Length: 300
Image (tube, rainbow, N blue to C red; front, side):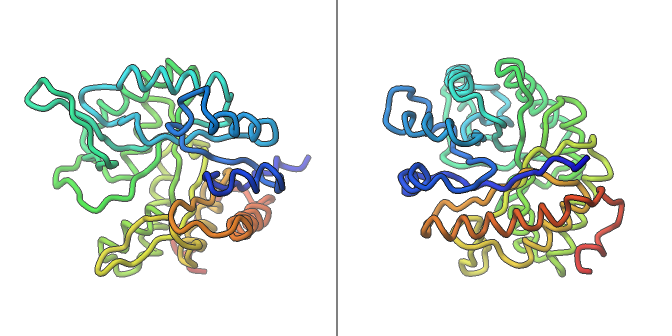
């Protein structure tokens, strides 16, 4: 029996709504930002409902603030649960980050950013509790994405890969593996060999995590802004990220893969070309079992 054919998809953004609706290109799925569709009565939700008739939809959020010590915003969670009930998505995801907290123990404040977590035992316990609350309300596993970050915490009890593997063991959640985020972080950390650094991360995670924990992979472009590499999803996927992605498929198996593009959006055909390249790599690995080879495989 042939193994199931995992499929590549694209992030669906407003400038492409009409073209996707009219052309119905061959895609495995589309992904949308959850918060843009919380209102069930607006035009965007009507478009999403039509798209859902043609494609599986993955909901990707930015607002749960899964790492917040003050817990999950119940109103936000209820709106997400309503969207999940309406759309019946193939996957639901959000980020390993925090964006809200109490000021002086009283006033709730919100950051307009995805702020990084410390990889500590205390933070892990908070994240597990919040993820489990979301999963209980949604009645399904959540995928949690690794973050691109430009500052970090000095204190750490875990490596990042070990932190996510333990999160999966304790909460039953999955990982949304953003390979571009790993590359951005490696380059900003001035790794001597960023590709090897990313492959080492993937190897460590593969050796520690529950089998099948990775439920989706993100690929995107990034930009150089002075001395900083910025994860702005503004370009085609770079060659090193494609190489790291191929290594991830070798180590983790075939995983549904998304092309993200959020700024300087090109014509739809450009996104479809990137998705076709991801699909070609998925198909190339269709008969390959995940391997225990180390990071040297990523540069072979």
